[in-house]
Length: 474
Image 1 (cartoon, helix red, strand yellow):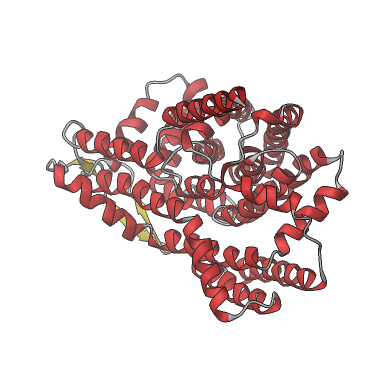
Image 2 (cartoon, one colour):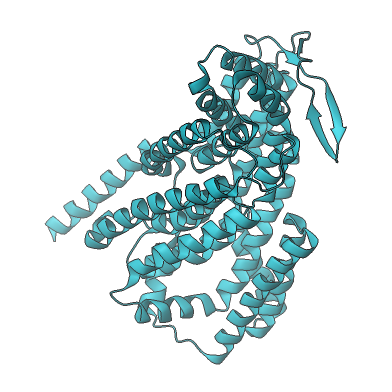
């Protein structure tokens, strides 16, 4: 008995020590806001002229000029967070509504029943899920720019893989890394490659052959990385990190929830929701407002099918929203960093000085230099379309001057824009997904950093190939 008490006390101490080493994501981002504020007193303020073209605001190359310094005040550090919340309101409320809809789905117990059924049928074959599901999300990322939608899938896949003996990190990695691999490979992603090639005056989706090889390389690397970790976790269950799903996993396995007829109808309606979602995105260009409304509508339908009364549906919606409130709020905090850079007029200055450095590199390294510039700028502009509109009007003509094809410059952009989406705290979708799974940012950072370095290595190899073959439109 005494040994048991000592063991529990030691486990509690170890857990507290681990939690102490995990820096709260809000604290981390607030520190970055302070650093950004200090930079407004150091880096000269400047601006490019801008023009409207095809509904996008583009910078005009060669028009950079210094402006009056605009340092951000101490009080602005705090007001920038409110402004960031307003700027990120679309995604913030999207996350809350999706979380609420999943709260209704969860209350029907259909998801628990499905997880229990799949976990039984996949006995001793669980590892096959990793390459299959990562391929699915890679295709979604490369064809339709899947990003915000990953939050939805993380809520589904994570409890499933936990029930199969893995952990929350495997669940997030399958969805987030899978979609991001596809997003940055961008075979036909309209939100980054489509816009970037349009600005660079290249045929839309041209140069697809090299990007297909790029997708294959990233996919194989991603599957091997996640598979290796999952196999380790499967063999050593004590190393699992269950995040927010440890109670759900216990319920799914111990309660022996059976897949009843009403559960099947609930899941059928949920599947129909995704069919309508894909159709709406491809046919009508739906974005987060329409997607959030769609999930809310199907949440109500699912609630009635699952025999929940209106009050129970409302309570379940609130419970679901509560689970993702941390991730939703942190999106606003991340937006505050951009507010400080914009108010301090540093965004264009950073772009100007970074692009100026490229002219001093040897021709063989110019493409790699562009890649690292885009890699850094993705911290400030985590939106693929936003970064394309900001940087490509400068990088495309600069490529002509330094001996890099415009197609290679676009490749450098898509790689720099995509790779760090899996690690930068300003990527609101990543932070929201981690919050859904209950994974601290610092824990995820340590886990995914080796894979990030692998991706950078693959990116450099492909950029050198592109430079060597004079990568062109076709």
